[in-house]
Image (cartoon, rainbow, N blue to C red; front, side, top):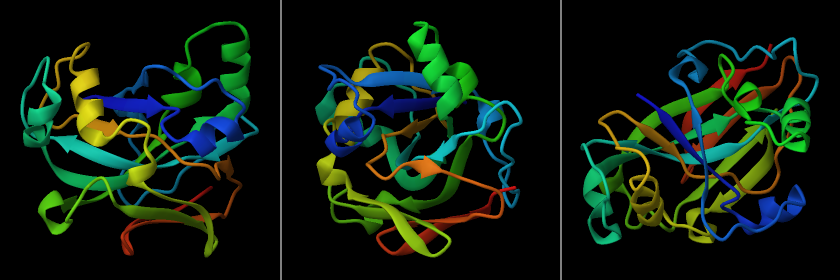
Length: 203
């Protein structure tokens, strides 16, 4: 399986990091070693002093597809989830400043939290979902999928031009504003429409 991640998909987050608004989705890949094992804490890697949380709505692919038209994209997933794209921000900045790839900052061991999955039929509209991240019981990130620059079906269409989507692949659809540093003993909880989908401890 592969983790396909979309960057800069919320305007407020683009402004937050002072990035340029893209004309096409920003796409990068996390390898499967990045998946944080269930019931395991997240360990801050020793090569970074500035790891940030980025909460994101997730989509699990359930059907093999290539060059998928947006009007058919909804047939290629039936579960929605929530997760975290952990980012070593200091490492990422060093790499970006040199024009180098981001993998060391994005795809290190444990850098991808994948919470519980919910059947999309339980939601009336996947493009109108509230979600939030709480850190130590305080809300630090909150948004609605209606605020995405590229909606879920548009993302499926776009990424399938470049990568064959396979059963079990997971798409991270982008993070809203509020990203921030995590430190040891932080407690992170993610909620999708008030359903708690993950709870992890930082070590």
